[in-house]
Image 1 (cartoon, rainbow, N blue to C red):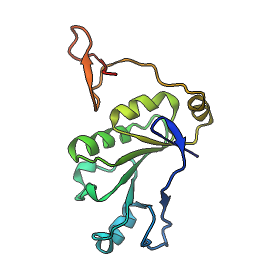
Image 2: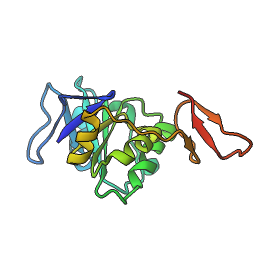
Image 3: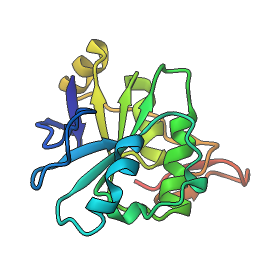
Image 4: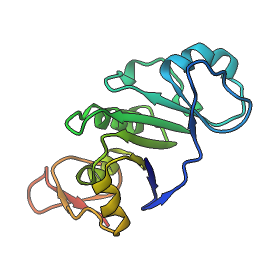
Length: 168
């Protein structure tokens, strides 16, 4: 797996906590939702960065959680045709005002990276060899006009109120 953030590959400083493992006193660990529910009382005042991995289909707006407690949230794309994590990302950014790292994992493909970024993702765990190769070659997505609103600056495209183009 390759870790991609800020238009570059780098080393991931986070690790996933095993189910039988207790939350350590230091380091950067990613907890599942079940692990967080099990350890949250002990971790409410802990002073270590915590990550949270949410499975596909979790109704983010129905979770009674303070997402600001987490430095990282990981959302999974179990297959490229499953778009639930796009909606979850937008809810985290727009409705829950999450400002930490939002990471996509699973079936993350080159053609999806731009839409993932527009939905609020800023880091990616990539296993697809073709995607890794294209990114290593410096390739970037080239779409400039969109129908879906995104996070960040956009400019209306012509007279159609639904059409947008990137503000870059």
